[in-house]
Image (cartoon, rainbow, N blue to C red):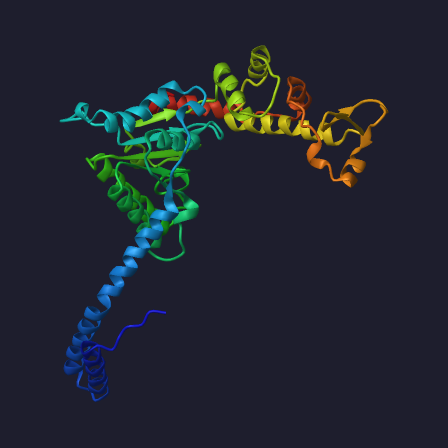
Length: 375
């Protein structure tokens, strides 16, 4: 544990404090006040270097806890061509072609991504950070909301400060509606108002010309945002549910390198059969189908030899063995994993449901017609 050394100045401060206490007890209020202030100044001189060290450590910890370096790419996200172009205009182009962004031609400073849950808003933020090779500083309610007075605003201030110091960078505000709902609501409290005010101040600073910092925000309920927050965004983009070609692309991305026999025609059928599904709906569909391979294999009664591997068989062929016998032989690793097929997807399809309703989509369309653009 670090200790403060008893330097002559520190020892002198202790003596002054002792004299101040004696004067206070003796009723010499003016002298006590002067001595207390002198002691405080002496202590402050001694402790200032330690305070500065603590502040530097706090800033470093804040940086480590809020920075994400994503390895994703925009190609991992299906569809959303307009949205991808806007994000490139705001990050990659200014970095790669700075000669175009001079005078009054400035890149987008603040972009709001809104749409139904699971449509890829957070994935887009991480993907553009990865593609542009920029640090991503995240602000989320669970990270910054604190019971201590002033602590939430301080964390917001620190994140923006560190983002400016590490520019070019991106500040990503997830679920911004939970931090910046309409002012004057019944359930609004003083802490919420202070966080909103702090965000407004720093967003305005970025919009007014802080170079190379992009504010990205995501929300599922843009109509709940405070209008002062809403107007701070240069672009408000509707991240829609994926269309047919995008759904087909998403299926391929989530299946990835998993061994499969699914043809282009079968991918077309999967895309046609999942109209109204979000990106996350498709993810869970793929996950269930890939797991069906495991279920189908490990619930098989018998296995037969195929070279060095065990493969499922239907009858009681000579040399066949049950899963229990394979376990007893310690040959679990020799069970061959079958390829995933379209049949596995068909088997689990009835368990998969879209999570976004038509009423939800109508609300987003109404908001987009009034305030946003389609992505």
